[in-house]
Amino acid sequence: MLRREIDLNPCLDDNFLIGFLRARKFHCQLAFNLLKKYYMAPVTYPSMFKNFTPRSCVNAINSNLHYFLPYRNSDGCAILLSKFGQWNPRTLSCDELLKFNIMCNEMALKNPVTQICGIITIADMKDFSWSHLLQIQISDVRCFVSTLQDCLPMRHKTTHIINHSSIFSMLFTLIKPLLTEKIRNRIYFHDTVHSLHKHISPEILPESLGGKLSNQPNQDFYISLLNSEESFIARQNYGYLSRRHLSK
Image (tube, rainbow, N blue to C red; front, side, top):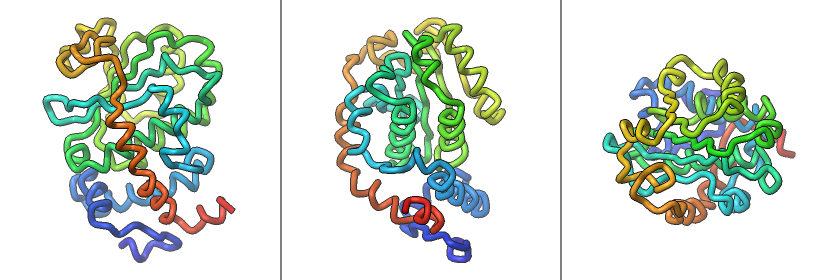
């Protein structure tokens, strides 16, 4: 099936391919369709995937806005904390912010446990303001949603949005039509941390979310990400041949 796809040079490593099978419950045709979308993403969104390596995202890493928490949820899900409200548009562009979020998710998916159990996202929108909203292009949002929702071999378990404001509600009005019904039904809005704790134990959350852990970012995750530089470089050797033409 893979070898018959015109102009596609895929990675044939078993550990890589099984992630797509797991994401589609071992339905081969659906897994193949997902793999094609994965390789089409850099063709469709070349600016997002240009220099798609951790060391090209050091500025985003130093901003400490996206990282996986050190402990998993009770159901085995990995938990991504995204502090969108703490984003400083003067030091980090919107596409850098979203690109790094995609990279963090892809890094987490290298773990078989995460492939099987899935990912929970916590979006902390505290201090999200007009200065943030005005820097966001709908094209960046469309790329971000399409890549996470349709192109990565990930199981989206739930998304929890906390500390949201009316300004974020405006942004969500733009995002919502891009989401599948399945994803929309897995989004929870929380007015208090106590509401969040009904889904995720405070034992594994940072103090900023009413938890028991330090607010310091998970440096072990960043170190692991930077140590995966070569695998992200190798990723760029695969894909549709038309992508290589675009990069020249």
